[in-house]
Structure formats: structure tokens, C-alpha cells
Length: 386
Ligand SMILES: Cc1cc2nc3c(=O)[nH]c(=O)nc-3n(C[C@H](O)[C@H](O)[C@H](O)COP(=O)(O)OP(=O)(O)OC[C@H]3O[C@@H](n4cnc5c(N)ncnc54)[C@H](O)[C@@H]3O)c2cc1C
Image (cartoon, rainbow, N blue to C red):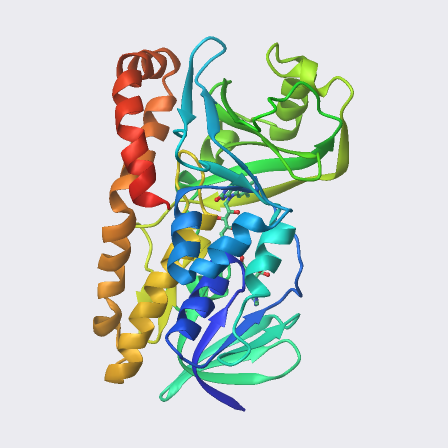
């Protein structure tokens, strides 16, 4: 049996960032993932705010390497189309470099994993966690190949279907606080802005659907559509039919896809935004990223928030190891630390999602508040990013 202070389960952006931060603090640990890297993950591939802030906090050189990586492209504009005639342009000023980066998760997650410390991080990739058992002196993590890791504390960075969240925190999925998305890559999409603007559209059916078109470094385009999981079910919405219909006949979209063809297959996945309605800590464990439900309900940032939660989690673990205290009461302040960082923005995103359900009311609100937003947004971006 392997004995270690910390075992991180999941090496997506949240787990990798936890590992990078632990290594920065010279803390030995294990990091386990059922996949080997590079591996794909269904995602819009857009990186904003907290992704930049986290990279910078982890290591200035990592941020520099990220900026210089030819597989990642950057843009200064996000265009949010509330309807066909009203949009909000989130634009960076002349003196700042970008407001969004497009990075295929195949490449970005590998980029992070390839920077894990050789000295402090012991990786077990391609070896999924099958069982977690609570013992008196730690948590026993049993892997697919029979290996056993006994850790003083474990981190659940294993995404939306987290085994740590289910088994140790006893969390249940909440369909009201989850989105379902379908997504695919396309080639030969034409007529996109040369400035690589992000295109985000609210497409109204019986509930608003969120449609994303993000350009990528290899000339392909990532296209996604989704909405709240319970409402998709309630209104019997077939996301695949809807996204095909938008691509084929939406008056502002279809012309760009006239000669386009899909690369690979359509994929579907969930996005959890149930942070604050689930348990994210307990005796000897902490949850990060999707496992903690930390995605932004409105604009679906989950990579950056996940990374930042990894940094916060690693700092809490350092304190826990220093004091030798892994009790639930000691780790409870982790919830406050996450709240301090994310609560306001996540609460605002929930409000936006609720308001967006009322098409005309939401459009009127945006119209009235547009100039206020334009004044506010630059300072929020600066505070929450680089
Ligand atoms: C269609 C779609 C579009 C999205 N678009 C964006 C976007 O544009 N920008 C953005 O910021 N976010 C977006 N998101 C959200 C984003 O993908 C997630 O929030 C993000 O991946 C969370 O990172 P994570 O590290 O917490 O989890 P994950 O990336 O899911 O990583 C979890 C890791 O845990 C591993 N794992 C799982 N179970 C086990 C196990 N039992 N044993 C060992 N390892 C295990 C997995 O192999 C995986 O590597 C989107 C999501 C979807 C579905």
C-alpha cells in the first residue's frame, strides 16, 4: 500500500491546478486519473477570467508559456446576442491583450498536466478510482489495477459525476442546477470575424437555449447548445434537432455553415452549477471544480473557476497538514474561502439565468442596463482575470 499526505482524484484543470499549487508549496502528493493524457473532454474550449488569474497565481512562467502556445488563440471580443437585433459587446481595451482564449481541452488539459512537478507530484494516469474507503488513519483509494493509496486527505477533482462527491459527501445530482449541452467540432465554417470574436446567442424555444460558436487555432470551430437540464426535459426539447436547425436555418448563423461539415460526432455532457447547495468538504476530503458544482450558471465558465478552486483547496490542505487536523470542522472554512472568491459572481449568474427565461423582460433589462454594464465590466474583468 502506498502512503501519502494527499491524493487528488482527477487531473482535469481543477485537479492539475491543485497539484501545481501543492507542488509550489513543496507538498508531496499523488494525482490519479482514469485517462491518460492528452485526452478529450466535451467543452466549449473557451477560457476566460479565472483561467488567466489561476495561471498567473500558479506560475508567471506558466502563464507566459500559455500565451506563447501556438495551439491557443486569443480574442479581444465576446459578442452576446440577446436576440437577433440586440447584442452586448464585451471588448477589451487597446492596452489589454485578450478577453477570451480558445484552447481545445485535448491540448489545454495536456498543457497543464505536462507542467506537473516531477519532484512533488506522483501521477497515476490511466488508472481509475474504483472504491474509496474511510479508515481511522486516512482514506483508502483503490485503483482499477488493484493498487491502493492511503491518504491523510483526498481531493475530489473528478468532475460532474465525482465518486468523492457521491461517496464521501453523499451529494445527489440536482437537475435544476445542472445544464445539459450538445457539442461538436466543424470545419469549413466561413464568414467568421477575423478578430476571432466569441459568438454567444440566446435562442428562445420554450426556454432559452445557449448557443456558442468558438473558433480554434486549427481553423475548426467548436459549436455548443444547451440549457437547464430540468427544463429541457419539461419542454421535451431535443437539443440535437435544435442545434442542427440553428446551423441549417437560423438567419444570422446558417450562411456561415453553408459549406461546413462536422468533424467526428456530436457529444453530450452536463455542466453543474449547484455550488452552495451541496457539501464541498468533510472529514479528510475537499471537492473542487465540477465536483463542487462551481461552473458559472450564465456564461458557463467552469475551467477557470475549477482551477481557482484548486488553488484555494491546496492552500487549505497546507494548513490542514501543518496542524495535523483533517476534521470536518477544521476544513469548514474552505466553504468560506470559496464563497469569498466566487459567491457574488455565481449569485449574479443565477439571477441572469432566471431573468433570461423571460424573453422580452430580459431584452428590456439588457437594453436599459447596457451602458451601466459597459462601465462595470472592464473593472470586473481586471479584478477576476490578469
Ligand atoms: C458542452 C460544454 C461546454 C463547456 N464550455 C465551457 C467553456 O467554454 N469554458 C469553460 O470554462 N467551461 C466550459 N464548460 C465547463 C467545463 O468543461 C468544466 O467546468 C471543466 O471541465 C471542469 O473541470 P474539472 O477539472 O473540475 O473536471 P473535468 O474536466 O471533468 O476533469 C475531471 C477528471 O477526472 C477524471 N475522473 C473522473 N472520474 C474518475 C475516477 N473515478 N477515477 C479517476 N479519474 C476520474 C476524468 O478522467 C477527468 O480527467 C463546458 C462544459 C460542457 C459540457
